[in-house]
Image 1 (cartoon, protein in one colour):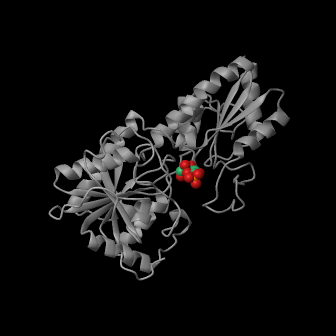
Image 2 (cartoon, protein in one colour):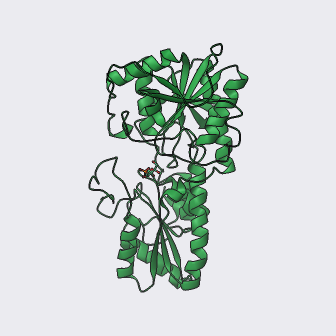
Length: 389
Ligand code: F6P
């Protein structure tokens, strides 16, 4: 907590140029592929526009007590385009807290905001780029409301931020999921087994739906569509009747059990901050009881967050980083870059946080999946998805 002592900036390398205007950047919350590509693009774009880029360490934490930063240059960010994680570090803990806009936001201590303001003044920052998901952008919004010049870049593998068609990192997570399904496919077919793959997605089923379609999943269970074990078993039986001796089940970690309960590792299951995980095992155990076939479970976990970005994410992250600098130069503070295909645009951070973008059960993704016979656990067999009117 702030103690009234003067802030001491700690340059971790390089030196500030007193003659150049400055832009700051930080990466906050859970990491995801493409963070370094955003940092690199923003650094390059600001360099060519005559700005110096300051990269703060460990999310918002590096902004205060003690201030910790790197002076970023095209040379110091060279080679990081393809690198997973973030060279600046990140955290979803600490003095700025992990916030979930959807739960009603937690206010940051006004003294902390004042310390941040001092940092802006001390380092003469013209603007700060906050790369984060719903919680981190809620913090950025509070900075903006306090008059600090911030802009946002939408980040999360879950792809659940409003106002943008895609967040960066999502495509890389989907590749990880479909790659896992490709591998599970061959072993499942060889042994005539049911394979249950648990993927990330706290509140939404984007990874499960896209990964499931891309990897040939047969059953996809997501938070947006209530499902039953009976319907999954009916799908497995249907496949058996059709001569398919194996089934791939993809389940989002946030999919609710029949009855509406979420499965969490920690006691705070009802809380939006709860550590999710375990539904894959529950689905596996329940299916084992109900069918005469081997069932195995794989939890993909943080493999989805680690590693380098796909080419799609490299391009998207680069566009986001460059456009975030443009927002600062044009003084469009309180805005977040977003993808409105095929264009990169911007939307107000206040609009983007607070309500999540969920999978539409009647949207084209689910419709196409149903048309291919993929089961969402809500019907006992195929139902023509184009025939609902
Ligand atoms: O929000 C992204 C996400 O990947 C969720 O899908 C997952 O529940 C969460 O992060 C896990 O975060 P951590 O293990 O870092 O607390």
